[in-house]
Length: 121
Image 1 (cartoon, rainbow, N blue to C red):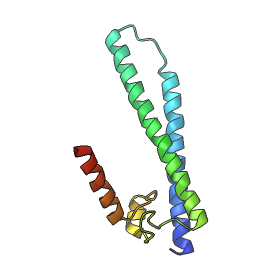
Image 2: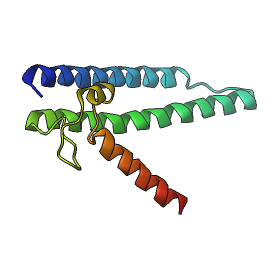
Image 3: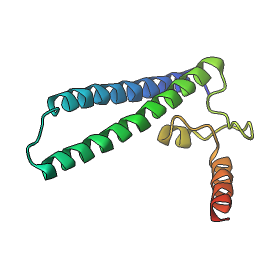
Image 4: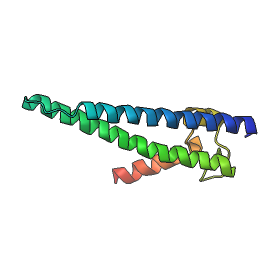
């Protein structure tokens, strides 16, 4: 991977992270505005369900941010774009689709097959 490609992926990852952080701020503002007491039990239950779903989504995004940070660190140390399992380069198409990928497609497929076997037992 050349320097221009590394900078492309760094910019893509930083933009993705900024988008997630902006959405998180918007969610916090929305949750604060929504912090009202609904007199109707159904409305209150619906509001609490929506809030729980939103908080779960934010938690997943928090984990995604740590993966983005790890990918940026790999760019800095020169290991970005190489499969953690085989050491082979990860295709640019895969990295463009999933910039936080740490496994090549083949290694990811093996990993998913093993998970499926263990889950089925």
